[in-house]
Amino acid sequence: MNYSKQRETILDTLREYAVHPSAEQLFEKVHVKDKTISKGTLYRNLNLLAESGIIKKIDGLDTAAHFDHNTHEHYHFICNKCKKIYDIEKEDVKIPEIKQNDEFIITNHDIIFKGICKDCQKKI
Image 1: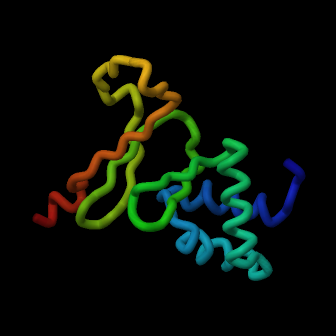
Image 2: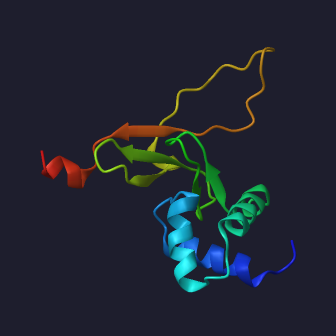
């Protein structure tokens, strides 16, 4: 992948704003740094970075895809109240073994836990 100043700005912003933002949320932060970056440029670069494995695109959290600068294998927890997304280390989760058969081949998996975070529990 060729170097791009705009791509670098997008990636740096994602690393600084490490809350698993949607493209719209990230655009607000990126646009403060560089007003020349359009939404189209942001979307193209996010998809390119995800396809290259530099960032992780997370689908299924809500209607919009979210992006994670943390590409090591881990899971996510979404708070039902505040909607914040937290990382859960793979080592902290015991996953049952799935028996392989001829119907499918598992190449990877994503696990999303949902519940109420510690901060929101204090408000109950």
